Image (tube, rainbow, N blue to C red):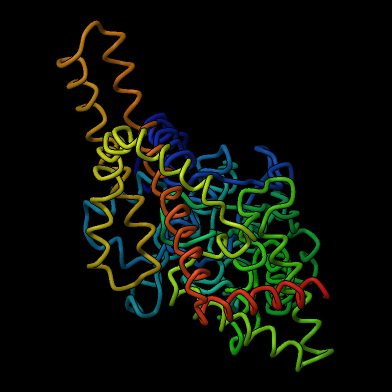
Length: 442
C-alpha cells in the first residue's frame, strides 16, 4: 500500500482491520454503542466529520464502527521518517501540510487534494477531524474550513456530479484513558453539499462559512457539548453523578441522557442563576468529599450495604481467587505493560492511544506464542486449544473481579463511616441526597 493507490481495496489491510477491530471493540472497550449507521450506505460519496477529543482513538472509533476502508488526513510532520511514512500509508493515512511545516511544503497539498478526490470517488469514506487538533474537553471547538474546502473542491473537480455527503459524527468515551470503558459513536444525518453549490459558485467564502456553521451545529447535537468554561468541571462531574449508572444502556445511551441534563442546566442558568450555582457548588463539594473518603458514586446510590451479602461476596472472591491470579497473566501482559509506558507521554490525551496501540501489538506478537506453548505443554490438541481460549476469558474475569472487590471494600468502608458517625460521610450523604432532589425538580 502506497500513497498512489491508497484508495484501492487491500486484503492485508482488511485482515489487520478485522484483528485490530476485534481487540478494540471486545477487549479494549467493554462495550461499543453505535447509532445512525443507516444514515449512509456503501454507495455514497462520504466525508466523515467526527469531534476530536481523544487523539488517535477518535479516528479508530469511526474506522471500527463502519465497514469501509476509510482514508484519514493527518498532520504532515509525523510523516518525516520514511519507514513511519510507509506504515502510515499502509494504514490509509494521508499527510496535510501546514504553514508551520514550511511554506514550500504547502504545494504538496495539491497532490494530496487530488488523492482525496480519488478516495471520495472510490467510495472509501474520507475521514477529516474538522477541529484540526484534539483537546481533552467535552466541547466542540471552532471548526476549520479545510473539510468544507475539500468537499467543495472535490465537487468542483468532478463537475458537481459526485453528490458528496458530509456525515457529522459524535463520539463519547465514559473515560478517555482507562481500559474496559464504554464508547458511543453516533452517525448523524448527512449534509449534502449540493444544496450549497449555487452559493459556492457565486461566493465561495460565504458558502464555506455556511457549511461550516451547519456542520458545527449538527455535530453538537450528537455529542456531549459543555459550553460553559467557568462551570465545566462541575457539569462534567454532574454527568457521572446523575447518569453514571446508565453507561451501558443501549436503548437510551448515556450520551443522550447527558445532553438532556446539560440542556436543563443551560435553561436553569438563564432562569434561576442562584439555583444553578448551588447545583454546581454542591457537585464539586460531593466530588471533593467522595475523593477524600475513597468512595465511588455507585456506592452512594445504595441505601443499604448488607453485611450478609458482603460476606457472601468475600466468599465468592476467595473461592475464585485462583482464577483471578491466572487471569492476571493476560491482564499484565497485554494491559499492564502498556500502562507502564504512558508515564513518558506528556500529552495525557495520547495515553489511551498508546495503551491501545501497545496492547494490540503485544496481542499480535504474543498470542501465537501462547498458542504454541499451549500445544507444547498440554495434550491432547483439543485441551491445548481449550486452555489457550481460557486465557483472554480469565483476563476479562480478573478485571471484573477487581471491580467487584472494590465494591465490597467500599461497602465495608461505608459501614465503618456509619458506625463511627463520620461527619464527612454524613455531610457527603446529605449533599448527595440534596443534589438528587434538586436535579429531579428540574
